[in-house]
Image 1 (cartoon, rainbow, N blue to C red):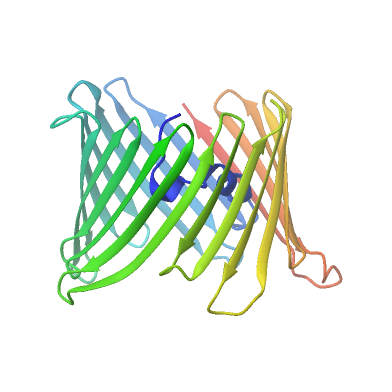
Image 2 (spheres, rainbow, N blue to C red):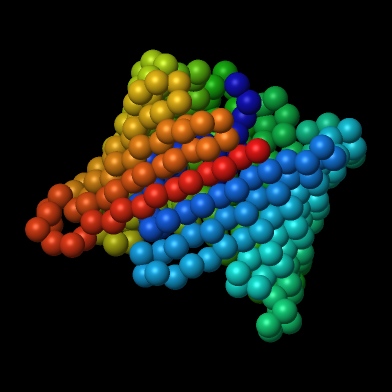
Length: 283
């Protein structure tokens, strides 16, 4: 199996626990389209439970033979971002990114340069913020026969100081994975497990302990059940009794509906629940 990025060492469990739960926004709509000349457009809009709205427009041009991708984003906060990616040009497995942002209202500018290097048993990344600091964040993972070990560190050039460090170990198999991470200067510890029981059922859990805030360990479990080839249901609950459920269905080719809700099982008599819907249109 391919070695994941450092932030993805527990991706299977994190995706099961966090993705495709639609209660976080009251409403979400996403429209995707592709043109014959390798340009993809995406428009997203969200409405929060506080009735605030936000949206973004994205255009992406891909030139696969030359390994070039250019992405332009403009959102309702009037923030512009341009991302240029070059993959496998200088060396196989090496990708370079330049990210440039501009906020017209304040003339704020940003410039970042990132490097990704991936081989069969190694995955390393370096992120540089050229205008703030400058700062650098570097992480790497090595793998052998499913076993993974990695670390990350941040450095502020102006302050000449390490800004943070983390470490992780894990094991990935075709149907299950497990990971232990220590983040925030090795003060927040997490252990996660994911299991694809069969083609219909997935299960996962995650335990987190923050050594700075006491001895309480947070626990969250989730499960996913595929009803048929075009729909599935998900559910999760944490140690505080907060539960969430979700339903996703492909209504027709290119149209997906998601419905979700969360509620506090300790306060069912109070209006603490949240309900959200999501529509995705693709062409």
